[in-house]
Amino acid sequence: MSRRDGRGLNTAGGVAHAPTRLMRTVILVSVGLVFAIPILAMVEFTLRRGLAGGYDLHRWTDLFQGGLTGAYRPVLAALGNSLGLAVGTVAIVLVLLVPTMLLVHIRFPQLRRVLEIICILPISIPAIVLVVGLAPVFSVVARLAGSGVWTLAFAYGITVLPFAYRAIQANLDGVDVRTLSEAARTLGAGWASVLLRVLVPNLRRGILAGSFIAVAVVLGEFTIASLLSRVNLQTALVVVGKNDPYSAVILSLLALLAAFVLLLAIGRLGSERRRSTAAPAPTPLTRSGDTP
Image (cartoon, rainbow, N blue to C red; front, side):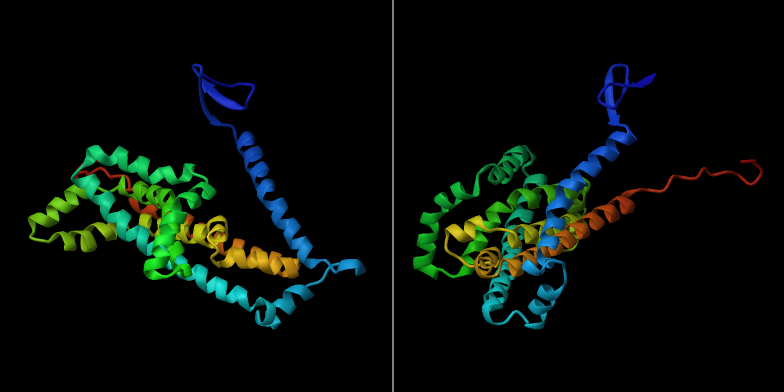
């Protein structure tokens, strides 16, 4: 017999189960307010008319009618840098991470826990500590290959590693890659064909989810770029904000909107995966003379 305790949880035999519908509603509303109030305050700030009072859209229209020229031109260059870094980071992470995870999963399953610890470790290291450790490495890279903004892709590859690993591992757990690889090898396929034509198509949802998360992280990263004196979207917004805080907030809202769209795309990928993996219930077979 189930009953509710003082915390709003359903209990059966002394074991707590899922929270009640009321508790779920309270939690969702509370979390939604935590995110919505700052965003609404940012929108309200951009609509102010200053000392004249009231609200209008002239700051939004002025920003887009000007085409981000003049003082805002560095934002376009910084946005290009961030998009290039996002592409480079995704390429580095996927080229290194996906084959390594498949190799460990197929040939060395005893090393799976070690790989997980290595991939999750960067999320526990503060960005400023990571920069202190990477500064000597970047000085060597600057002497050998230059100090362009593209070098940040190596640092960003480390910071997005935990997110990409979790997204790909969630998909990998639902695919029998060992059986697929053995079947393909039995039919004469080489390891390159097994990887590109058999395993990667089955992991495409996890790979896309990890890529989207990596792009969202790179577009919102500030600390590493600032401490290493590189220019990306977030550092450019800080510079613009010193001269025109309203435009900086508008551009920040657009960046948040882009990240939100990416998260919606990830959620849609996850829902499609659940629908595709849900097998229909088998229907019983009856003979012609039998009654159902």
